[in-house]
Image (cartoon, rainbow, N blue to C red; front, side, top):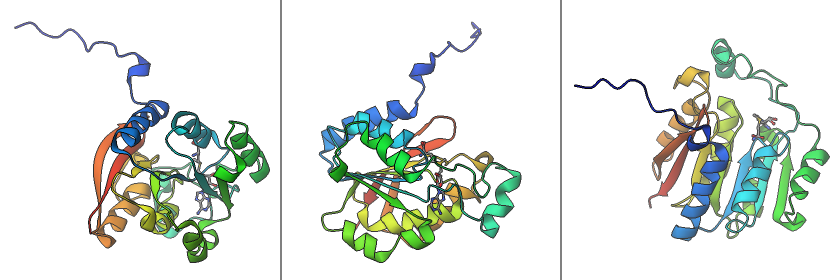
Length: 222
Ligand SMILES: C[S@@+](CC[C@H](N)C(=O)[O-])C[C@H]1O[C@@H](n2cnc3c(N)ncnc32)[C@H](O)[C@@H]1O
């Protein structure tokens, strides 16, 4: 029997990067006629939101971002315990240039100001029920992008966005495989708990992307 000499070399572009994933999402939303906004938790300097808009703009017309723009908040005990696996997830890391800079950066893509909402503040105070009900009339999500690194922040984001989930919403977990892939920290812990508390939400695995991220499609059962 012939021994395979080596794996064929894969060009980098054939691996799933974030921009490639947005292309698949665009096709999916179009094919399945899914309507709803793009919600991003953890905007930093707007890079991923600009990328999303460039690719999804024919499909998604509202972009809503949430961030303190001051870097990561003080750590909970669980997030402190995880530092031995993920030492860069410390208070103050990933601080944005400024709210104004991020707002103007995103608008420079051509997105109309009335289609963009950037909510400033740490989630503990900013993700209120008032805000939830303001956004809710007709409020559905076509894409939810979680990129907030920490367990507590991810849990807060999931609780806030829960009513916006519909069958066909994409849930992008940027930090899914961080903490060396350990399931008792970060996004994986938050997601596991959220799903146990909300049995009407099922997640279909779509794929991993980049080196540390994973995409799901939501199924909402009544
Ligand atoms: C890794 S950065 C996001 C990167 C961005 N999505 C991109 O790819 O360009 C993480 C962001 O989450 C924000 N963040 C994390 N926890 C937060 C919290 N509890 N409240 C507000 N912002 C938070 C931080 O301020 C930071 O800007």
